[in-house]
Length: 262
Image (cartoon, rainbow, N blue to C red):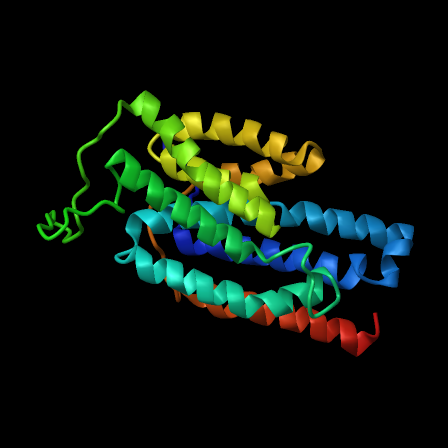
């Protein structure tokens, strides 16, 4: 049966960006202002936060896909680290209304830790695009490095990858990054089950409900529906727009709040 519509990576990323802006606007303009005391505005904020639950699973999926397709994971990780550091003050201004908000660190730190967890899982299991052959690199027709030899049976490899992610999840928990331990595990799950879409769907739905433990989990599951419509294509546009967009949209939200006196 032919799928009537599908999304490229660029389209999924754009959906995630719109969802993220709506979510952060709800936090910065409603929850962090006197508007939150009004019933109508409070309801509006809740609706916007529901829309915003779609963003993180999509970004987690983009990290999982990026881990597969990037030519240099070191540069990929360094770009995420730089973005996380640059974005922390704008994030604190929106999330906590102050220059320093140690209770919550921005989401990019979680994405970075998820990428590192995936990378370490590849190295332990001996498979994946994060595995190289030392000085003797093998390349296929695409010019990409070939994967290593699987060290564990597939049914065990899944658990090993999750266990390998635990230190990075704990780092997210203790550093108080947005989405924390569960956010890191979601990235690893999306990466590990990327070739098993039906199993991935079932696991992710259960995982997201456990992650939120309320109706926000149902909203987040919309992202899984979108991910299942991914066509495997990059799509047009600038693939690195997120690196500029993320801190700028936070500064814009903060500027709007100051301009209207919220």
